[in-house]
Length: 252
Ligand SMILES: [Zn+2]
Image 1 (cartoon, helix red, strand yellow):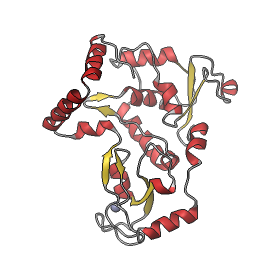
Image 2 (tube, protein in one colour):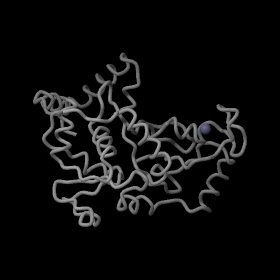
Image 3 (cartoon, protein in one colour):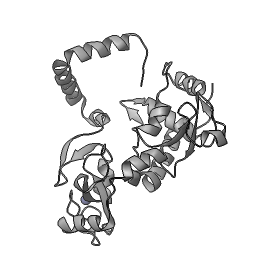
């Protein structure tokens, strides 16, 4: 079956919308690839994006993933995309309030928009949002500088001299809401460069990895070393994963 859209181009469009409309709500952007393979959740998101406002059935998604070389019987991504990542995908099974009006039945989904987050997710995350005063106070604590590179708000950026520095609310830990103790001011370059790869400390230094896909950007030698470390440290888990992979079924 031929699918009539460009995955990479769609993904770039989604990322752009995400930066404009969704990022500040704590919605999670998904990695397009792990190694040289597309991730299943990114493929599902791209599929929805190309059928925005249309009913998408579970069968349809399964067929698409199979065509893309991902044999799976249980597409969970659609459900997770809303509840765990904040994308506005309604589910007939879950019985979201919009389903009736949109004719979305059990086993069916619909991506309503990429300009608003999934409402329940928003509520969850926004409870911890910074008030304007707190944000000004937090910036003052950092001398109105990017916690990571030190560029000063309103002055030319250290790394991009022709750009005037604007400070963004950077997550210290991207899995948690933007509360006062989970926020650092970062210039748009430092904020964008890290995406959601890392967890930062108060000084804007990388503390640990948040998105495991970041490991795939390391040299092969380092990846193998990490693999060895992880296997030695989690032998039983590693055996389990290997036997699952032996089934030739890839679940998300
Ligand atoms: Zn910076």
